[in-house]
Image (cartoon, rainbow over the protein chains, first blue to last red):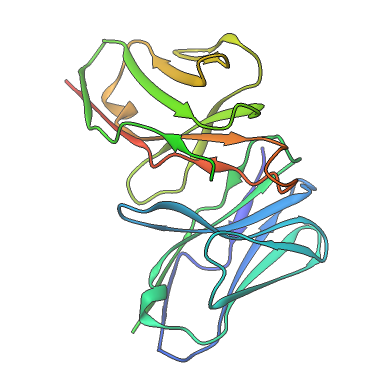
Amino acid sequence: DVKVTQSSRYLVKRTGEKVFLECVQDMDHENMFWYRQDPGLGLRLIYFSYDVKMKEKGDIPEGYSVSREKKERFSLILESASTNQTSMYLCASSPGLLYEQYFGPGTRLTVT
Amino acid sequence: QKEVEQNSGPLSVPEGAIASLNCTYSDRGSQSFFWYRQYSGKSPELIMSIYSNGDKEDGRFTAQLNKASQYVSLLIRDSQPSDSATYLCAVRDPTSGGSYIPTFGRGTSLIVHP
């Protein structure tokens, strides 16, 4: 079974803090993704990585950065957390460009 | 801008009935199609993937793809209350500037009542 894990299920941070969200997959997948999900807005792609050290902006990259130094790990960084970044953050991985995605359990981030 | 459209619902069906969930997509070049189930407060989980026209069956689930009509559907036979969830349709294709980014619909809420 594919396993995608995320570093925290729940996280509370203060405005202005630098926040790191980590995602690890154990299936040697090429592609990894970071989404946020908000009620009524669906899944919105923040960043996408199709290979180690490669990244591509998604629909809403502003205020975020990513790092992929190793194939199995994809990190999302909130440079200076703001209250409008309060959301559910979902990581996913995929074995290839046209294949299915497997999601981690999500991190519910609250910025106060 | 690629679009994937789903009726938000809720779709309400009685236990034991067939639930039919529909999805249309805008990009004629789309090549791979997926259905995910998402329970409230949880992350999406893959139910079915389909790549060619026709039907694909897996247990109580059947995915149907019609590329000419740009339409993909999910049938759930013998619906159970545990099937109550939001169902997300997703599409991936190699023509969106080479980015291969999946496009998700906003999901259809399904309620199966006893």
